[in-house]
Image (cartoon, rainbow, N blue to C red; front, side, top):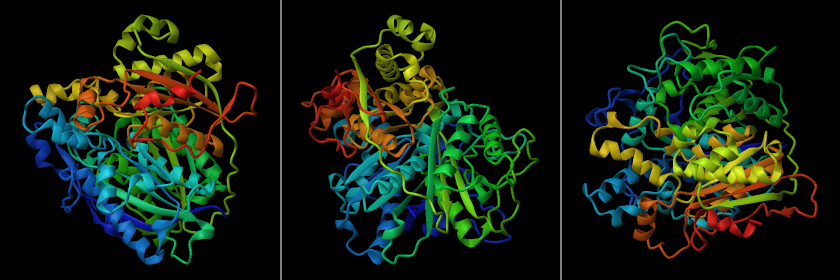
Length: 621
């Protein structure tokens, strides 16, 4: 058997810390809702200031000491580590993998950094180190004496709302390949005005409370939290109790729209079916679906169609929309919702769904008003994200009988490098109208130009159906600064909703996927300044495991003023850094004379390599 067994858990949400953060299994109980009017969002001028904040947490030391996201992750990480110290003494000396997901990362620090650069208070030099997407991860690790470079495998998924689901899936793949003895996987996000005003500008937030799958639903409320699970192979539990098992993983991309879902639900259904196939079970074995359930009109209808497609001919599963209780916790959503589903399996209690009103016939789902005893079998976790990224996990409490995935060799087939992306030539290469390209930010245009050059070399059909992994150094820092500028100078209601999607590091992968029909797994990574090599390693991992047959790796750098100031203030300005992008096409086909093998254990050099896409230049021919 090759399930990934969860032997330690740490969690925090608006419901509490530890098991309280995800406990949904008291029979006869209605769903507990922690969403309320948020005073900070109200003071900031948001018209829909409803959110779910986690309890007060101990402050941290260091550059990210005031970063709520870092405190949340440190709390969850500490909970998992305390259990590991009890059940697996000496675990720190093992080959440890680290896969953490986030949507906004160090956004709270970035907000302060942007304001300080505008002379609105604070010293930008002192604030720069806490302004990166990976700053909270570094701070949380430091709190517990963990050194980033000590991990055998390490990645930081900046993959929006699917981040921690993909993180757990990557952990399963590392264990499949015996690349690690133990994996710490999960995700986190703190509540920020920046993100809240962005979702409000997109009209994605509710004026009251979320009502998933019901008529009149008008959106979500944001939440904050963190969750960490410790995964080991089935044969390597060493007597530790197994809380639950991750038996399958699947991922896909809609390749339809950067924020709106594929209304057919086909993309999400493909991810769910891939996870079920990976687990070696049938849909009829699944009694519970942990839904993405943002309570927005289009997402819930899409997800209902996806669930109907997955379970066609099988009994309808209970659907649990946990976001309606703890808010949309973004990068933590996948792991916290998985923990709630796993707790339901363990207790043999189907959880209640929050929200009131009639069920929407266009978004049918089997919801319970109160939790009730029920044999559930296995659970399916579904996640969807900006950029059209979808991910899914199969969770069980009993061994699934899953067969280990064999590892395939991976090869580099083609590459491209660009330094700029003028609109005329980009429009000619891609066939996309110039006015649509003009709405993209610099980072997306650069990434798209690199993939367009790649398509010129191999032909567009060679890319269709492939996955895409984006690697970032400072990601969307300059785009975020531009988006936030209107809030700083005017008000949250003055921000440009058209620019908000581009603030997601997933946007580059999503825009490329739409143009070139890249429907395989997609996400973005950034655990340091060599996110490009990190993306190469993650893409190779999925190819080796058979999650795709071809994957595009794209690394792009805007290299704008905010990024250059940050590098200067953090003493990194002497490292090579430039505007531009690199795109690579990887596959797992039989080698030929032009193919170059890729090391599955490539280790990014975040401390000394050229920054961003420049780290991949040695692979460009």
